[in-house]
Amino acid sequence: MIAYQPTAIDRSAANALDITWSDGLRLRYDAAKLRSACPCATCREKKSASDKPKKPMSLPVLSLAEAQPLGVSSMQPIGNYAYNIVFSDGHDSGIFTFEFLRELGSPQNND
Ligand SMILES: [Zn+2]
Image (cartoon, rainbow, N blue to C red; front, side, top):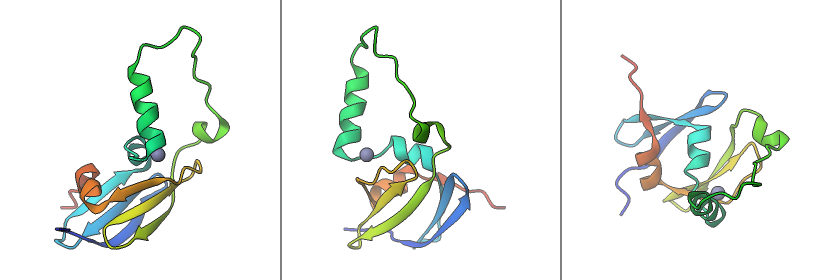
């Protein structure tokens, strides 16, 4: 059962967006934070791999896309329970359920 639904999505900054929820709560989402929390299989695999001890030669090399400030390119609704978020680095396989998004957001104090 879905408790809350987004009623508005605003691009609040180049690298962040705000979602207003059906109960009136407005939460901020940093693109980099969303990207690092991406629940897709590829990202989960990467995360569990990074928990293992690193080999001495595995120096990560940033691609040009990764070196740019990350943004959200688009958000496509999936049914009435989730968004497929496309990031500016081209990553597009993350399905973020409303429930998950509620947990990820940072409350905004506008007053
Ligand atoms: Zn992912």
